[in-house]
Image 1 (cartoon, rainbow over the protein chains, first blue to last red):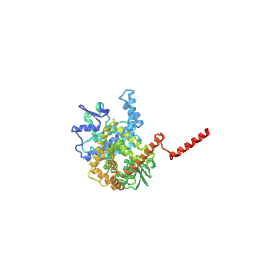
Image 2 (cartoon, each protein chain N blue to C red; image 1 turned 90 degrees about the vertical axis):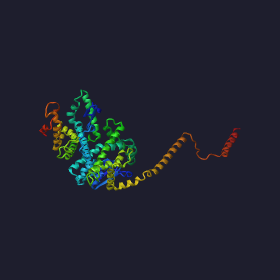
Image 3 (spheres, rainbow over the protein chains, first blue to last red; image 1 turned 30 degrees about the vertical axis):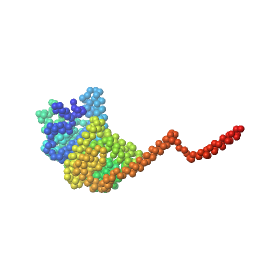
Image 4 (cartoon, each protein chain N blue to C red; image 1 turned 60 degrees about the vertical axis):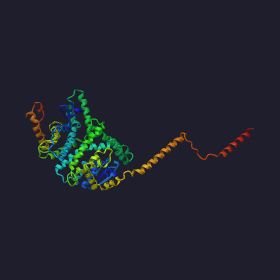
Length: 216
Length: 314
């Protein structure tokens, strides 16, 4: 459905817009923006932190999913291929793996060890945690696209079960980041479900409070 | 005992080094005041690890900027003493911003865009590197960077689209940096920090070298605080390069002329001799070797011979 096959995408009338930056720009064209209260310095800072998340967290996720042998065999292969019939599931998964490997190689990530990747994630979360400090959101009382981006990545890292839960452990060690995710989940996602958390349709994901009770 | 081996600079541009990582490391070393010996070279195979740049110290040899800064900080040579924890996190974020938005445009303009690559970058590396590395080393970088740019776009063959998109991202980034710097001397106040070293390296390479696609150079010139930032840093921390650059900029053409004339003459002579030699070998031109006999001498010998024949025959 989406141009170039990219998700996520939104469909508004005749328009189909994919990926975060174009969606934000499209919505801004309609007069809706989250950054009207920010001055130029804060907007630059916000963009810088968004680059940090895109460069580090996104590439670390790709590395763990597609380069780390254990995770690839136990999780990624079945997850990626599950929507296609045999033999497409094998072929497409292998193709995607080669593409990701090539991309990570030119970016200098494929050569890193798993330990170095975990250190990069920790360094990144430390910088984000430092910036967030005791505030509700990164830039004041209202969330911005940076909060949305951070929520997307951290929520995934916290709630996706992997053979090695190091990533979730690293994120959980920054309590203000976990709190940010909980607040966003509560204020923006639970409202749609009418407060219910189990079984039916959109509520079908692990809630952050439940996960906090799992052994670390 | 600390040594930093870096790529050579270019006097006519007033650049301390022609390489991004080398510039970053040199800038950090100068900003922090660490007693490091800087050794310039255009032969990576002469360096301790076979690569440039490399920082050699008691703990080993480092090739990455982050490794160098971590080591120097441990030795109490830090640029970031005055920064708060939040500002330190901003340093991390801005490094990634430049990596995402400015780095692709920089390597595209230097190493991928054909006119600039062949007429500026390749030319410089070819004329400065030793034989035989000059024939294959720059091309390897060119190939690597082409792969990087190709991996970023769905349709990398559409060079117009690629160039437009890269310029757009880079210009947005430069504008953000300019807004962030404002009227300040350095990004976080009166003394330069790690982020100033990184920003300096990007801006110097884009501003000081006259590439064939000058879009970003013009953008930086249009942000006076960014151009000032670069010139002041060079003046203060790399004074020898700054002076040489200012001097040779006035007469860029003259240096080339004598060599050009001589080379032209030599090539002409070689071509002429080659053509002449071929003409002789093919018989198109005949050259008499030695003095030709005069007419009297020739007849005299012939008459003698005939007389002898006649007398012996009868």
